[in-house]
Length: 381
Image (cartoon, rainbow, N blue to C red):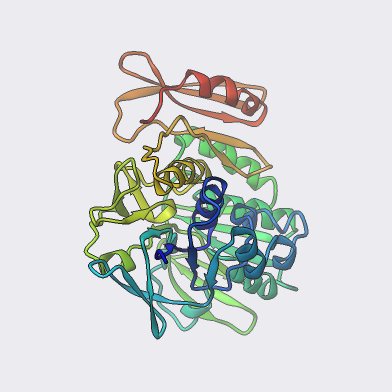
């Protein structure tokens, strides 16, 4: 009997790959390994669930047993994969070994912890899984104020969601404006003003240095010398690819697990995709790259070696106070933004030095132009 194809991780990347593979190949043994309970849920909805009144139970669309049945797969839950023996094609999981024919790492990303001092460090929460969201919902009950560390995409989405649910929201970030890694400051300031009208207060050009428990909540000491009283602290300062397991097999790592356009690592029969992977130099922790990688890798695993293609893949920032769609230009590309404002909406187009369109930002009413602009964009590869 052939050894199974093994996928480590049951987030969107792991489950989507399994689905795509089963569309092509119904019979090859398939095993999935996950450190959590294996339930399936739409992770991007975690940052908008409060507005829609959704609990973690309501967000869950399938249990692990149901997913295993749908995929005709063996599914190990609450299973910690600690090491890989690439020579013998074995994975060390809890107190046993699991053999594989092909191994796919879909380990996702882990949160970056804030550098804080104080007696309440352990009470700062980051949301990266549905069980974190369960804790989050429980801990903000009957609270009035929430402070968010970080004004990037996730920080802004949670700020909007919490303010919609009538919390007083504070956002602390070292940048000068929201979304500083995605959009020019001028556009970030427009989002800032929209969220401020929704009871969000920003504290820019500073970070939280210390958090201490008080009689009524928490006290944050900021790097600018100010102090902030709050009922709850949520950290959204970013994610980093989960690479620890890959290193046990001698797999090359840069920012993420290095793979080529076939999602192959430097170790034979081991692949990677999703938030843990660096594909041809690109770490893109978004849905569209996962969907493209899953389709290509499913074909490769079924015997039709297929390179992934990355078209222009806009990122939707879920901030209803001022909706934004971003298609960022390639890093380090020389060029300039041409920004137009009309009726509280922005259309920003990025042109390289040859006047070719290589990126865009649309806000508010102009987001409907997304599909038109995508057709004008070149392939990433």
